[in-house]
Amino acid sequence: MSLLEHLNKDFESRVRLGIMSVLVVNDWIDFQEMKDHLQVTDGNLASHINALEQKNI
Image 1: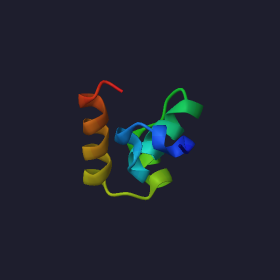
Image 2 (image 1 turned 90 degrees about the vertical axis):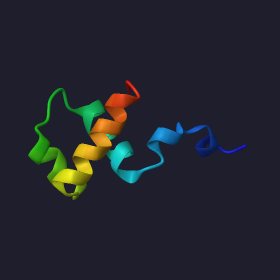
Image 3 (image 1 turned 90 degrees about the horizontal axis):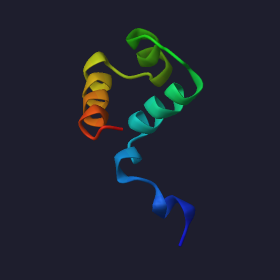
Image 4 (image 1 turned 180 degrees about the vertical axis):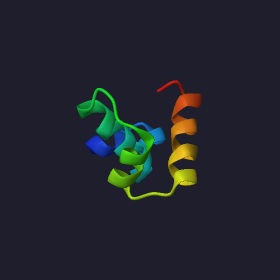
């Protein structure tokens, strides 16, 4: 069984994994900077953040 098979399904998305990766190395980051780092739209980032918040991650 590969290591990736144990990855939480909530992080299969590149954006969600990116959000968590950015937050691991930054104490604080604003929405615009996160959006620029991940190269996503406002709505896309907001929906992924909302999904992670709903999961209490």
